[in-house]
Image (tube, rainbow, N blue to C red; front, side, top):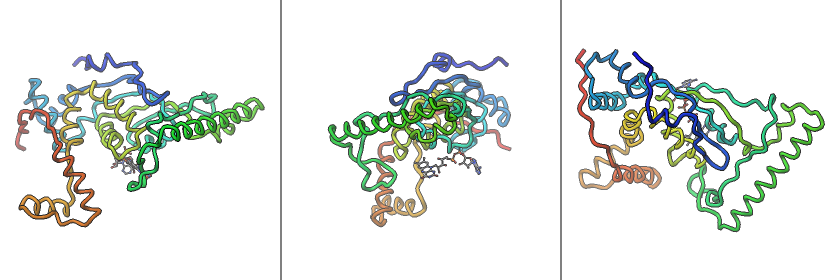
Length: 291
Ligand SMILES: Cc1cc2nc3c(=O)[nH]c(=O)nc-3n(C[C@H](O)[C@H](O)[C@H](O)COP(=O)(O)OP(=O)(O)OC[C@H]3O[C@@H](n4cnc5c(N)ncnc54)[C@H](O)[C@@H]3O)c2cc1C
């Protein structure tokens, strides 16, 4: 069986997708695509699927039923450049392999993240882990100027120590989290979907969402049918707790949700998503052979 190539992914290879002010995501290589998912699933389900419509139905069936291992057969390798505070969040996703630039071996470049003024916000009043309103432009510019000044000072201290012969591994220790780092990162499609679901979500920090969107663009190019199924069954799905399910049942019966203030707020957020749902054209039905 020949190696699977996907024209949309071939066109993306080696292209830097710009992210934030100095970062990027670059698809270095990929292995497999929708066809690999279908081939590997056929090991379980036999030769039943052949046409594009049937392949799509099978892929939707797999994701709808959490049969995720065929998606692990697709691998993507990226070269990414991001500020260290984003790398800290990113690296929590353990189901990937990576190799990062070494600050012990190399002199770190004078490259720091500086937010755009419209991303400089006050602390959120109702979300301890988030941003609220954007600062007035003048105040935002003052924050940016302060960030840049402190970055310059830190980098000047770094180069001063290097000039004095201090070891790179020690001289770097006062460099701030806004410094850019780079790595090669390899992950399978199932775990990439998990990353995108968590990090492209509105609850994630804006800066990592920007990277998740770039990774999503690559995932979509490599496996468009799988990406469609991911949007349909995972991103587009809503999970209700037992209490929320009971509240929904009460509402469907014409009653009140009957939840307290905070649970009601969370429930209402889910209802907003529920009302806005825009599903894709339904795939054909895939019926696995009965065991
Ligand atoms: C909005 C948001 C806020 C967050 N805030 C915080 C925070 O305040 N503090 C903080 O520390 N983290 C925080 N995190 C990180 C979060 O707790 C997870 O560590 C991160 O999202 C990675 O998820 P994961 O473990 O499912 O992914 P992966 O590491 O990719 O793992 C995928 C799955 O594999 C399994 N798995 C992988 N490795 C192991 C293992 N060694 N043992 C058992 N099972 C394993 C688990 O089932 C896991 O769900 C936050 C994440 C998000 C999205």
